[in-house]
Image 1: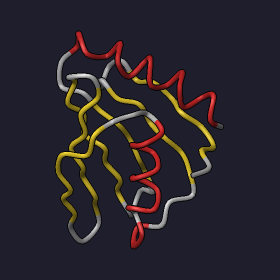
Image 2 (image 1 turned 30 degrees about the vertical axis):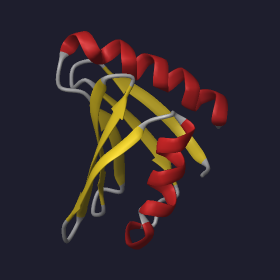
Image 3 (image 1 turned 90 degrees about the horizontal axis):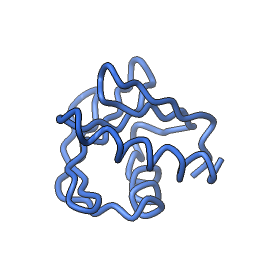
Image 4 (image 1 turned 60 degrees about the vertical axis):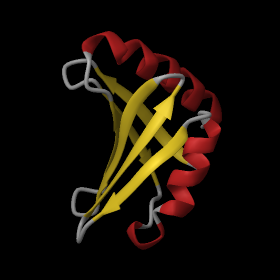
Length: 97
């Protein structure tokens, strides 16, 4: 798993992740990513152009999304007070670049 950049967006409670991701083999990116941040995979959903996984990190639920057409991957939380979790994860991922 080789990340090229990570970027926080507090307005959307998200953490964008840029990497070389193969849509057809998303699990080859998502499983090591989840493991590297010590997150548990709770659910995996996918459709024609999008993957959406539910992760849990130390009690916080997060969505890991990847959209094929935009080549966009991001982690998101639903509550504003959980954004600090994404800030922490961003610091972890920055160290792995």
